[in-house]
Length: 395
Image (cartoon, rainbow, N blue to C red; front, side, top):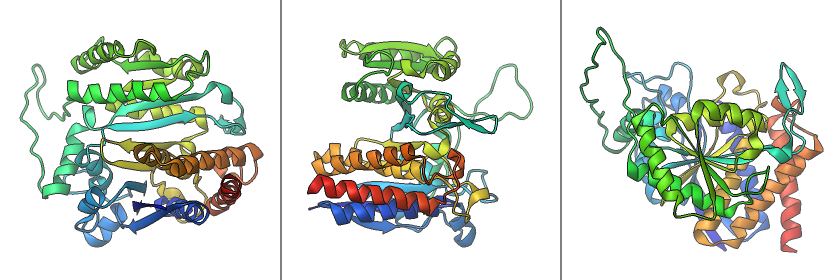
């Protein structure tokens, strides 16, 4: 039996609600497979800060760093929870961990499951075809336009001090000025891009033609940081002659991603561009309630749904738990690949199949997918399917 140490961070708003469904899933995997999960739950976020004046208990970062094989996060952010410097309360958790644990790659699968309809003009209809949408976007996660915020959060996390922003003057601009530097390094670009090519080698290629293809998305016709990112991309592509490569400017890519998603297999891009493009991409897969993510580095991994804390829905039990359950699936896959653990990889496949079967049945779906089921009803249905599939797998 393999035991994995999991740190669970429920967070704010609907975060605890979807994490509850994730824990049900972990329970059934433990009961039906050789896997075991030693779980530590740590309160955190904006609501915790409003109650205690802290973003999470002291020692939490060290626990995540030293005593966790993986981290599972619900959501961070709550109205009125803002630090004196204007940063989001709870940012020390998600942003600080990204920077402090060097989680350099944000991995966002954009896959449309059969049975999922798209909400357009307040109606549910099949806009994109499931066999045309299956890409993975890898976004650089520690540099770029968010670097200053990430480092402020990490510095509070690790030494309790605020980083001082450098003094800058801008020719031709006077009066009050707010600015954020956008550092993009060769080293940071190289490891993200190389990971993208590694991912391409594991997949079956783009839906359109089955070609393994990596697309670099940037704005290298305008910004120096993107020029470096593109240059590094072209250099690394030479090491993978068996994988097709291409580049696109971010503004054109957002159009092509919506019009021709079947062309794309793996996409690599910088921090802010990836943040915006992947949220747009969630429309292809049925909305933010379907969008899972992994924040991974060389030694650590943090997995979370993308939808945020949804304060207006908090406590109602109506949000879609599938993004969270798919985040568990990504976590199991990552653990399985790191440890060469066939049981973890099998569990990941079973979770994905259970989710796929549930969506295809069109039964017990939440409001965002056109249904009326509650968070727990959807979670229970998927967990029941996982239980059955585990029995089949191990019998």
